[in-house]
Length: 498
Image (cartoon, rainbow, N blue to C red; front, side):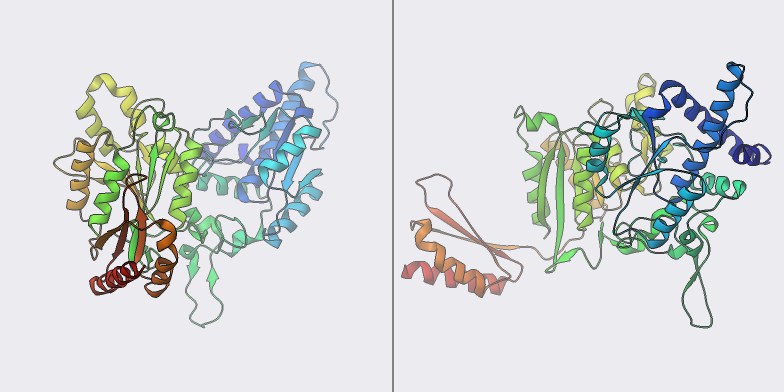
């Protein structure tokens, strides 16, 4: 078999070890599950291409072992019997589609083509073709890799099947070492500077591979395998790209301002709040603190202690360029999933951080070494530790996500002071707030206030009652004091004429 022969003939000992481990995982899966009940998800990308050839080699070696055990020395067939799923998308690159179909034809792979989203398509497929295990090309550092092992059951809410990840521990360098050593075809986009391929809407060539062209012609790029730092393979994902110079005070400097106001989101992680056992006092406290320095809070969410739930919420808030505060779920307990979830949302893996580990050991002592080792795994390449003399352990900042460890208002007060001292939070123009009360009903003030809102679009005008029969309080807030005063005069005149 040409793949096995190429690897075993290589001088790359690391590659041999990685290959042999992946083949062992594949052979274990094929021994556990009948070939009719396993499948392979192929999408034409580099990782998926690696998996195709690993499966070809793994199936070949598995079959040869079975034949020898049975005393059958007949020639082994080259057919590829593992059911292969391809999720075809209208936003996929034409080159990806072409490569997928050409590769399937060349190696005799029968494709089950699905034109739905992954979850819906999988549910429909498994109803008609029972499947117990699916081989996936997932690696540490992929957004879906957090919490997975070589054999991992599907997530709650998904159809039940075993996820098999043969090369979970491979690096970007390992992927290209395998493809180049085996001399197999891969999608042509990788020779044009693409290092991680999503859809046509969010993927561009990796700028780190750009080649200066003195002729002033079309920009040129080196091939993907020439990227020296594999941690930056996703730098070409337009919607998710990140560079330290793009960030100012935790936010992207241009997009973060909405009408001149810096915005933040708050995500609290804790089942006890969702069950009603505990009242959240930290969220309102943090809102007041942010408001005091001229920030506005655009969103507060309380989510369950589940990696996928937290990751989805963080990714959603980060995508609109809020500064995201996460509190709860940071620590050694089974429910402390926040760090892993943030790593998943930011599409990086967790790796040991020695500086953080040293401070945790100083706090907890040697008795907690096991828990400390786990707690000291932080998002790779993007973690900043916020140190302060009043903090027992530093706070964790990853891009524009800040993780707080406070469990009560006193601790949050201390951590807030440390954040302010670190100058990570930009002090902006403070809000000017005015209040006026009236005994008029909501119906009586509704139309007049609507007209004032149109007249003063930059002024927030809100209303509330502290009790059903109490007076209506009207709040006016903005950053231009004169404009707030003008709006206040307009409201006073309107109320007196009602």
